[in-house]
Length: 218
Image (cartoon, rainbow, N blue to C red):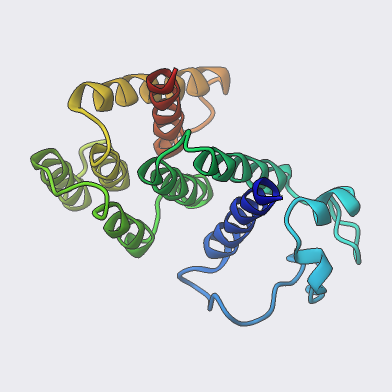
């Protein structure tokens, strides 16, 4: 029973992250009530239950039948599994917090090739409960500020995200994250036949982080 509770807690956090990405900073996180983006109909409470509502409605809006993005379901399942990993002491609180931050920033980066500074800052402050401020963190933040002021071909958000990752990784592990993320990004660019002028790097760095954590745990 506790496992199910933790699973749906993680799935609910994923659902909330989806709302944040959809609304913040342009709209209020509180009003209006959750509604279908296509037809505007306010969703009843049972349509807000993570995973189950998606499966019951077969991935469509109950009212207008528009197809919902599959990533809603995938991310809810993923964070549900992460939450269960925390329950079983497989994943630490720091890793779980970093994964939540990573999902949030990855969705923002996929949506708009960037993210609001508050979306990075507030979760990162939470990471300081697990790790002290480090020189690597400061250096990467300075590089992020530099990237914001000048065109160095790498987004400022990528440096800020790496700064957050550095709070829980050694320099060697962080370099592995960068190498794996860059490789995944290059492969994605090539597979898309160079049709994309800009690549959202944060999701690929997140993939690199997951691989590094996986090999550390195994």
